[in-house]
Amino acid sequence: MSAAESLAMSVPAPADLSTGSKASIAKGFGGACQTYDTAARLQKRMGDAMLANLSADFQPESILDLGCGTGWFTRKLAERFPEAGLTGADLSPGMLAQAATNGPGHAAWLNADAEQLPLPDKSVDLIYSNLMIQWSNRPEVILGECRRLLKPGGVLAVSTLLDGTLWELEKAWAQADPGQPHVNRFAPEADWQQLAGEILPGVTHRAETLVLPYNSPLALNRELKHLGAGYKGEQRRRTVTAPGRFKAMCRAYPKDPAGAVNASYRAGWLYWQKPAS
Image (cartoon, rainbow, N blue to C red; front, side, top):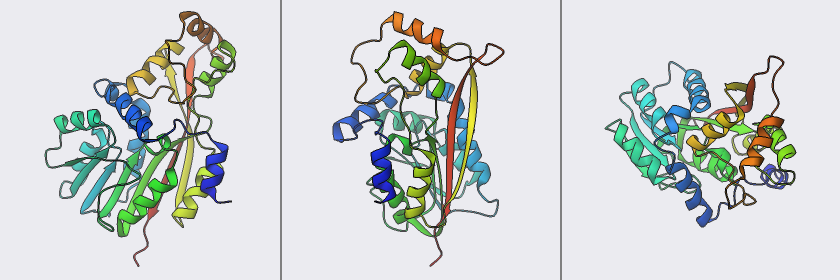
């Protein structure tokens, strides 16, 4: 059994990413384009870590920001590599419209599916993808596309979320609403690393648990909504969750010894340089 098959069996996809569901996901994130940047504490922290990991000697001529969202890191990439050609690609037209409004002015904006990018083989020096790949149930296809697009010697930097993310919220909902999923599930770390290693020989991995503080569990729920990152599984309720269930979730939410509300995110990064020949 390949790692891709193992991953598919062990972790249910966040959503059935058929054409219709992809449109729904794009719409959901597009609906958050006005609030995303103010809520994106985790996204900024993880993306900054990827930028810091890039070698100071690396000077790409062409860059693809894959899953660029509002263009926050497209702008940062433009500042760091002002001479490079720059493309921001995203599944969501709403996010791309927001990105184009904020610049950079010389960037090209591409509304495209990361699993099938309309770009030539060996055409990109740097692919930067921050917290996008976890929303696909075919990450191996996306990694294969990245391998295809990179020039020899090109660099791939990807961040994702792994199993263990939001365990506090999952535990609270399990008590407040047993049997009804409310939290997206992500790949187990070992399966993700095996999958990436099969497609990108020699890939480097790093994982770390990041903990963010919140005023309350409702503040966490609000942040996820502002990011467009609420539960996307097909088992989600089609009606508004009753206030009583939210109150029960808040009562059940784990607190640290000082009584503070925190949320844990199992963050994963991978870095790969395509062989020069």
